[in-house]
Image (tube, rainbow, N blue to C red; front, side, top):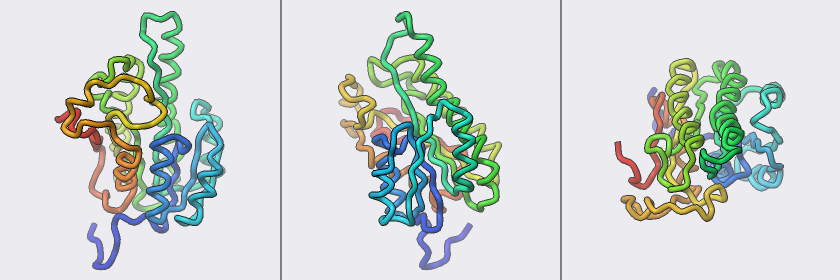
Length: 249
C-alpha cells in the first residue's frame, strides 16, 4: 500500500471503531484518541457509557453507547446484529483478580477471568469478523499484558490472569492467520498502567524499568489507535510491547 501525498495514514476519518470496556481507563482513553482522529465510535461496556458517548460525539464523527456483558454470548451476537459493520474492533474489556490459587473460591475466579479476558474476545471476533471482511482495511486490536510474557510483574499477579493474557497473545496470532488478508489483527501488551484495575497493588518491578514509572492510560490508547489506522496496514499478528522497558525480547 502507498499513501498519496497529502493523505494522513494515521487518521480514522470515515472509520467506525467499536471499543469494549469503554468505560474503563484504557477504554475511555482509546475512545478519546480515536475520536480525535475522526472515528465514529461504538462504545460498549457492562456499565453505562452514554456520558462518554455524548462527550465524544462532537469530537469525532459521532458516538453511540451500548451496554453489553461480554460474558453473555447472546448479548454479543445481538450487539453485532444491531451495530452492523465496523472498521475497527478494539477488544479491551478485561478483568483481574488478586486471589491466590490456594483460596477455596479460586476455581470460580479462574473461570471468570478466563471468560472475560480470553473467551469474550474470541466471541466478539467470531461475531464481527464476517462483516468486517467486506469493509476494506478493517482492523482488530486485542489487549494482552506484559504478564502474558513474564508471568507477572506485580507480586500479587494471579496465575489465572497470566494464563488469560498469554492466551490473548496466542489467539492474536491464530486470528491474524484466520482473518488475513481481509482484516488485520494485532494486539498490545501493556505493563502496569494507572487505572482503577490495579490501584493499590504493589509493583516493585516498576523501579527497575528503563522508564521507571507506571504508564498513563493515554500511553496505551494512542498505540491502539495507531493499530486501528491505515498506517498499520503491514502489521499482522504483532503483539506490540508498551511496557517502558519492563521486558525486552
